[in-house]
Amino acid sequence: MLAVCAESCKLAAELIKKGEIVAFPTETVYGLGANAYDTDAVAKIFVAKNRPHDNPLIVHVATTEQVAEFAYVNEFARKTMETFLPGSLTVVLPKKSTIPSAVTAGFETVAVRIPLSKEARMFLSECSVPVCAPSANTSTRPSPTRAKDVFEDLQGKIPLILCGKDCDVGIESTVLDLTSDTPTILRPGVVTKSVLERGLGISVRDFSAENKKVNSPGLRYKHYAPSVPVLLNTNGDVVKVVEKIDELHKSYDKIALFADSDVCDRVMHKINGQELLIEVLPPTAEGVAERIFALFRDYEKRCQAIVMVFEDKSEFGRSVLNRLMKSCGSHTF
Ligand code: AMP
Ligand code: MG
Image (tube, rainbow, N blue to C red; front, side):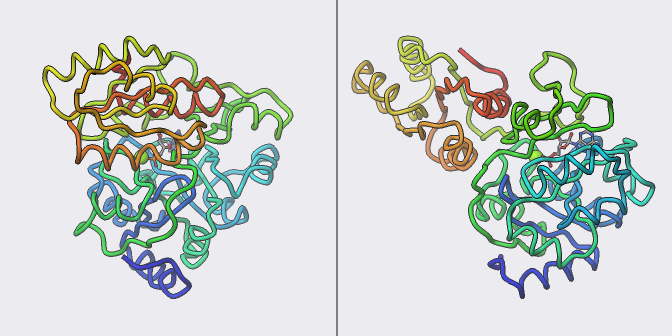
């Protein structure tokens, strides 16, 4: 691990140009990067993460000018990128043949992002080649939002982790498909439908909110799950939460409750002296997103089951819920 600075970014870029893979911070989650033009380097990402080969990677660059090297950029795509990038938005564009199909899992499209994080862009500008990068975790595990989470999953498997700030968004970028007539959200994130519609002046379809088979391949797999079960309640019904905790106590000694301060208080009044680890969640969806994956990683070492209450119905709250539903394997009560 090396702290992000001009020198370490140069070293990291040298490794990328030599065909190695390097983990780096972004504002969403830590990424695991390779030279997107080097098929052997790209293959190393899939091995290190144990990632299914049909799950394509997002190509990261430092400036919009680089995008035309490997993707067809029409007027609307240019406007979208100018409006939202750098930022926590990934746009899906028609790919050029310069990008190997290993990056795009055989698709004729390529996903592109310019991170907002200055640390990420410092590294990317040193690389000079586009860097394809999924999240820097073992597949299925909670995404890494701190350098130590990357270390936990990938130590011994990659030559360098650039150690930067903890991620302040905390969940992955919004994925917006620009290859059909209507811009379509494939994966929700902090750049929400209404933010996109306001910025672009046209209506946007949210495919991720429709209960249909998704055409973003990565969304099919188990994701974001800690090693202990997560049971999710989305309506704040304290009676049900207490019942669930009682039921779990029949099988487990150490149970954790993640909820806002009001729900935590009300549950504490109702349980009778049973041991319960309490994590009071921040009051906003933004606060929860920033911490949730790190909390899953910390608590899987301390408890045998996590009961989580998340009731936020805001637009970004629904993006966070999209991840939580996967963390809990859709085990809601
Ligand atoms: P990750 O880097 O782990 O967040 O995964 C990248 C996400 O981007 C996955 O959900 C992919 O399915 C999605 N993605 C990458 N490339 C494409 C593409 N060409 N078309 C649609 N979705 C994509
Ligand atoms: Mg991921």
